[in-house]
Image (cartoon, rainbow, N blue to C red; front, top):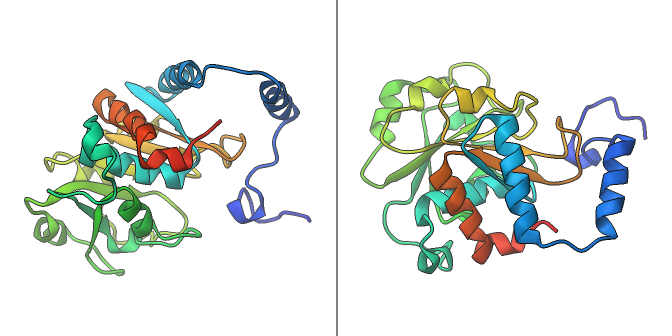
Amino acid sequence: MINAAGKLSSLGGTAQAREVADAQAAAAMAHVDLADLRRAAGERIARVTGAEAACVTSGAASGIAIAVAAVLTGTDLGRVRRVPNLDGARDILLQRGHDVDFGAEVTQMIRLGGGRPVVFGSLERVTEADLAAALSPDTAAIVYVQSHHCVQEGRLALSTLLDRGVPVLVDAAAESDLRVWIDAGADVVTYSGGKAIGGPTCGFVAGNQPLIEASEAQQRGNARAMKVG
């Protein structure tokens, strides 16, 4: 196949550089303590992204589910083990133009993490009044999607979503700038490792320390079904 479309999951993501493939082959022939490896990888990713902390995921989509669950459970193991069947405030806000299907729907990733998607605004335009009307005591977080799949005009900028009293989670799956969203104030950002980064099918979430600790805690719950290694 001649790929003229780019680094698409449906076409196998990115073609890996030789050194990446060689590193994978070497790792496949060794045993490691995965908890230590996850910790070291998270520290390295945090340095590269400028985040307080980071953790490895099986992809950007799983990163959305894990980050949503992290917001809703913290490190409470009892709640972690009840995901997605959670009580309490669990509305996750999403602009209408960000309600996309990238091969699966963003809203399903939110539900996998225990959230209840609340889509606001219209495809043509989303206003601050729409956001204000959608916010409620049941709001737990806002998800912002940076993707070519999204409606590009008439959406609220990330800066408008900040300082609303709830975390903002950014899906930057295929993006190559690993610092811009953290620098802009996002609480958690999820990336795909198998697209612009040039790695295998994998990903990571990076962000503030408490939410990343809560993301790691999901390994004892629904993230076990999305484990890496």
